[in-house]
Length: 453
Image (cartoon, rainbow, N blue to C red; front, top):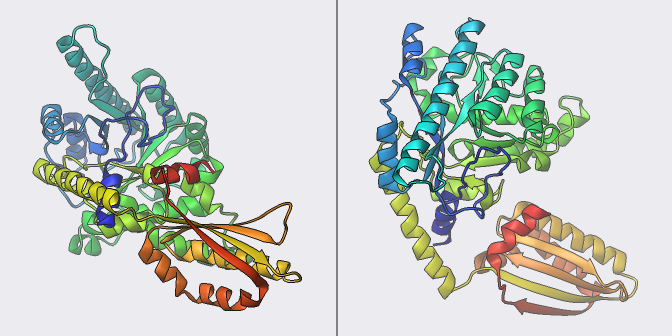
């Protein structure tokens, strides 16, 4: 039942967007359900794609969309706000002047839509201050970096955009390219919300894309490829002001990033990569759950991030309203059931081990305790914390805070090779051992504690 709780909790990680552009998405802030993965497809965009014969470039026809239909879907499913972005393809076809004008037109049309919907709500509520049910993230005219910076400034300052949308690549120029650093610096300085979206990879094997449409697999590869490229250049650590939303539950990142971590030392030693601060990179990333991810997918994602960095997403209008409604109802049901289960049988195990070490063995014991604690937290998903501490006035007295996700995780921990090695190797070092079991009073605050650290 816990896996359902994780999925439901993740699905309702949401935040209201505002026009100050300084609010980090966080589930603890608001009570509104905000859709961070929703597309607007205005007629002007559809016409531009048709003009260049690009309407089917992504291997899937542009779906029909209207603001009225979108609002109806939101009303039926209980979504309070949607952050709109343009879909793929990116509106650059070799003519930078055309791209600049198109992006400006799209951004102004979306800004007008946001304001018009706000006006409609205001007229129904008299003088009460209200927000539009829509917000938007601006499209930038890449590959011209200076034009993109200018458009981002205009969209944020004049049009009221809540952030920007960036394609994973613009016809071969991938995010993470050093040419884009001035744009990254600008977005970081502005503490901008950056919504990523996969686009057709370039170059690409057309036959492969025909056999397996982009949306089925390559979009996940493209997202993973781009984020890993940015991490390998330490982009998110170098420009920490950005708050970046990664689509589709992080794609393959829960598999890719541990591999990058494991290979990093030898790659760094041989000069194949520069300095990478993985933890600093991951702190900037949020993940939308568009695509109806499985419980297992969300649990894998939570090995990279914390629940407060998971955001709701529908991928409307590419996903039918009835599917969106069914997903929300399913998650609500599992949330209620899992909350009942947690009340009836709390799972989190928190205990304090009080240890007195024999004279002459202190250094050896401290090394062994550090080793088992580090290995357990790094390699065991169910081990949340093993934190040894030394009492200042009594150096041979050690206290260890141990936190396990549940009883199953604790029992599994006891059978691991590193714990058995620690247990057998320190028996002669320990004079006394006392385990103090506790009842955690506010386990829901734990993600905030670790995020704050």
